[in-house]
Image (tube, rainbow over all chains, first blue to last red):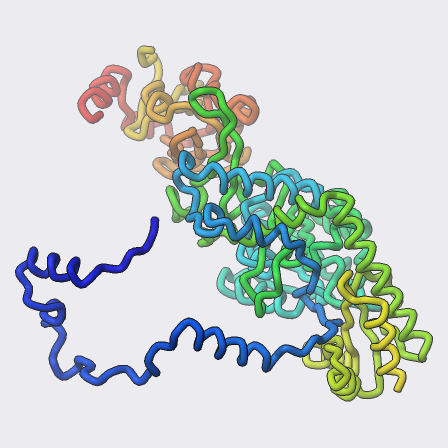
Length: 441
Length: 128
């Protein structure tokens, strides 16, 4: 539907039809003394040429090319140009929620493909049409676990992203779940602490892998402990490209998978919108919040797609709903789907290999010049270093056009002067060598 | 399908068959027709304590999700596991193979408040 403003003639015709002299008469119910009589203090409009000029000048103010070694939950990856071409097609870009399947088959099919890809990558049996972001998806997985197990306690690794943990805390407080944190040691969840804290009151254990420090958790060991106690094993992935090279959470018998899909073709977007991914076992599908697209046949036997199992939140039995989510990140999910389609299995594998190899290249480079790699655990594309003066290192790097790693002390006081570096396929060998050179000096 | 005369019926369209102190509960033919194709049944757990007129199971069909209310008070001693794989048994055979749960009751007199087949016939005719 196009937007066409009313012409003066349109306005006159309408006023005549309803017997009104002028538009201001329509506001006569508003007391005169609160009516704004002055003109708004905004400058008058500019011509298209002047606007283009002004915006160009503003954009040039930040036209410095940096190299980025910062991740911690949001990752810079290469976005093939085909992604934007497909996603900005108005049929996709302006599509509304596909409540009416008969006019939404394109979008519904795209989301169905997205769900299918999520299952392929994560090894889980069924996925939903996306959540707002990884953090809220993780929090929702707690509600799911409590409903399934009928237990009230959530155990969570302290190596989960600090922002995610805050969100989980908020949701747990609101639902009166008890939340217990499990310490990390050597950069990964301390398994003996987990053994000690888990009990038959535990609904689920939440673990992120690779975790906030980039370290790969021992999901095998953790799974045994969690399932031996009858709790659910909830696995979270924040750097989605890691799924291209690490064993899938499904292969570790995860009960609920949650993730952040921003790495799949979505720009960092100043922190959002991002893409929450959620998947689970078929037997828990009715506990899965959010939208789910299903495949079916129409009255003529042709393949079609619809929103399925809608009776869980917004339509009927709302009082029984486990979540208030009634939306999804359709455009971001579509973006991820196009990104994954254009890379294919081999392409995604290549991306994750590059991330892994370049991260180890940086780590070795820094190690050679005497920088301490804080944790011995294997990592994917992020790792922690300990330096003498973290803020000085970052300011020196910034002067040379390099955005360094995240200072961890504000999130983990025990990790003072520690920096979390991230390397992706976008970091060139020259950039990495340059970083090492600056740190050396 | 006529409503079997040996059963008792509730206003919420459940039927009850008493065998000693065990009440077998299901939903009526009228109910399954209204629900249309049933796709999923959420059964109560064995041992669960149920109360008269309180929800004890959930039936999901292609067009709705409805609670099944227990017409009696007691403890669930058996559930119809076959409904997990074949929920449409309720559509095909609501009074027989489509039973939902068996409840051990404490108070037989609770059944006095339920309708006979004839009364239920009248009830469904006039109210729907």
